[in-house]
Length: 246
Figure 1: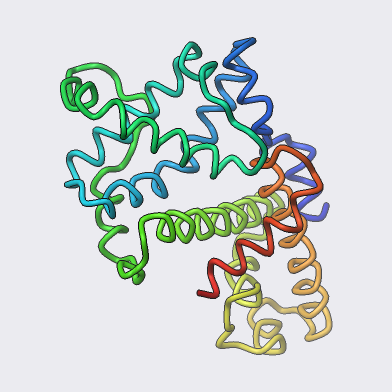
Figure 2 (figure 1 turned 45 degrees about the vertical axis):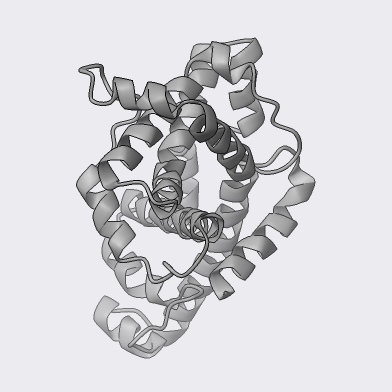
């Protein structure tokens, strides 16, 4: 059987839109660039929602504002007006959101739930439930945004790995070995996992080693999507670790 990552890659399951392509939507809009922007917006909707909520807005107003922000951002004319500058996509989005909140509150309120289709479908109940489970409400809105971004990135990495194993017919195996990933603590030893899977201790240890290598590779890929240059990847990963260590 092919290795999980090989199977997934060959199937083309995980497109990786770079945010420089997204920004091109402002000057040279295309189906590809606007689709890439929408993909990244789906990644960041909860961190942005948490930021707006933590600035004191009600759940309903926060939902309206995030939706209004996405709708405005997805309009290529407005995207063309944004000056992105260097740095990761998360900083670009937060700067754009601050500008939107400062200038578009009345318009967003007037248009709220106005019958139009939502720019990015959101699970609003899930968003509010997740917000209330945040342990860091003593953080500033900016710090909460950063923390939400970091956790979202790691969950996406885990989701990619989970899907790769599923494609390779190893979904049950992933459910056991994922507990050996960074930040986790497995209740089982490699030998005990091997007993459950009918594998030797050495085979499980090799699987865990490959999984950790793949985890680091996917994390780098995920981070690289949101940066202007490849040279920024290592610094951004260090930043992610620092955010979660606070």
